Length: 312
Image (cartoon, rainbow, N blue to C red; front, side, top):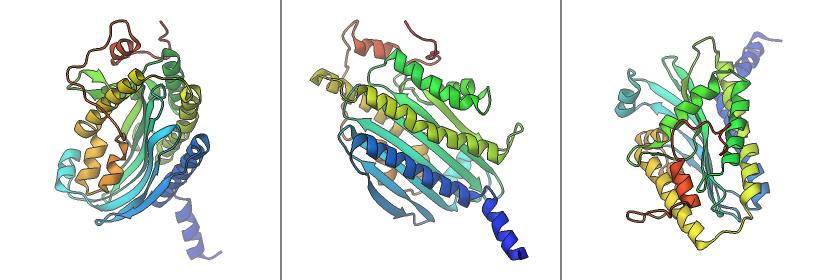
């Protein structure tokens, strides 16, 4: 075998940005196929290019059970804007960022909103890191389903490090917090960022964990969808769903760093805002009925709940 052929094969075996990007594209394909099978509807795809470099594939589904869902893949590159340089506290540099981002809004109010993101970022100075997570926003909190959700995430985390779940759960509680409402967006999950080659971890270690998180998404969501998609619901339930969606919108537009990063780097606006639901409401000074399921949900939008063992 020639030296040049050896060099090519060694390059292809390396965990570089091209391989990571390709694996994320495959993850998008797999998740979309599973969601189409579960819902019976098909995704509409928009391929797009970013003027500063790179592009992506935005896929939107509007089906029988998923009212509006987006599964995005992107791989963008170019010069980091000054605003991002300041936020990251780094010197002028070119960047590459790739990832998969998912938000699903259901028809049935008893099916929760779910969000998943896995991403990789690097700069031409050699700096790199992974980020991501999964979090759940039920319109109506069900403690048994909350326990199932968090146990599933813990099982994935424990395969890689015993400290991952408690650390990343706390991170999610703190991150997915609507400060101006003083309530969590939902029941949390896991959130992590800037996982690099420190504390004895290699790039391969971090990548394997991130891909396991991505592959945990469908088993979790499809179980929650199956259990709730055919439940009867009332107009009152839909009204409450629209109010909770309003809170979701508030977080994404006011506090979410991913939304801000996408807009600040001249990303595709339609793809960045695919996380917003088709319909949401804001009712002035809304009050819930005492001792209702709605009040129960509001009372449990708090940080620090151990959902795995929390059964009243």
